[in-house]
Image (cartoon, rainbow, N blue to C red):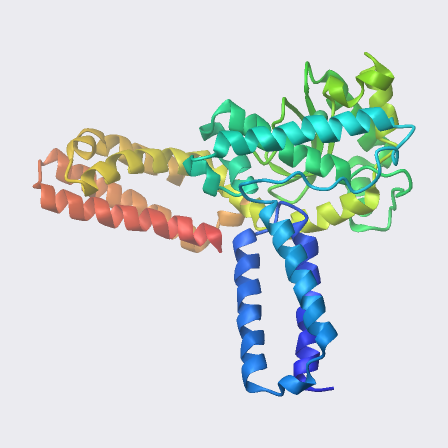
Length: 393
Ligand code: MN
């Protein structure tokens, strides 16, 4: 077998893997694209400088098909968002979910979330956000974008975690974790049932992976989910149950409990296992952990509100708030650091931040000139970004 051929095999496997990964919205999209571009360039070089005659037509054809599939999946994760294909026929989950409910739920409700999301994003800065980013920064977005982005993400997951014949397997990754965390599948079902039944009005019940990689159950209102900054429980959802009336009313009327009991016996555990494994490996977990580090966010806010005006020559904010900036740095130093970021490097940078903020505050008190203060605030800003950078690795 020539080198080209073996590389192509590897390349195809990688492409298929990327394609599968991208079906789940919680992958690091930028890394995938970078990896993909690198592969294409490498392959192009191979075409140019090595024995092209060994290439078989069907191989090129296969790659073209894979690339087409790849870009379709990829575009579904960014504006304009696309309604993903329902992975089965409308009647595939009968009798748990009747065909009519499935059809309306998918082709009307989910489709409306996607359309409304695209309409709301059109011409806005948020049109550049990935679906993940729309979740992460939901608190900064309009209610229309937050609800419809959540609706799109949540329903995409919902279709994928339903199946009649994909039973729970205690030997899989998720199987072992469920037993270790909840004692049994029945205990987990009871918790999910309770979460769904006690959610007042419309919302979702979730099984999710926490930032310390444990399993937990919660519920959320409307179309919120645990990825969102507005959620009190943060992590990556791996199983979500829609408890909006539109999900069950035609068949179950007001009996949400009956619907929940039935749907919890209709879970595609193979898909949940896949979601679980991906969530554990997802860089998004670390992002959520950093985003939920309140003391860091509070410091960041004061830093942004003083540093950016200073950059434009306005030192009024920093002259008024240098004491506050120091107080927030001390808060960061004395508070609990999230486990992944509790490293000597980050601790040292936080100490540097307090030292720098102390010195800056003294300069302001002594009414130092603009140039001296600007320089010191710039250095402090760099130190802050060192912490942010360290959090990413
Ligand atoms: Mn729904």
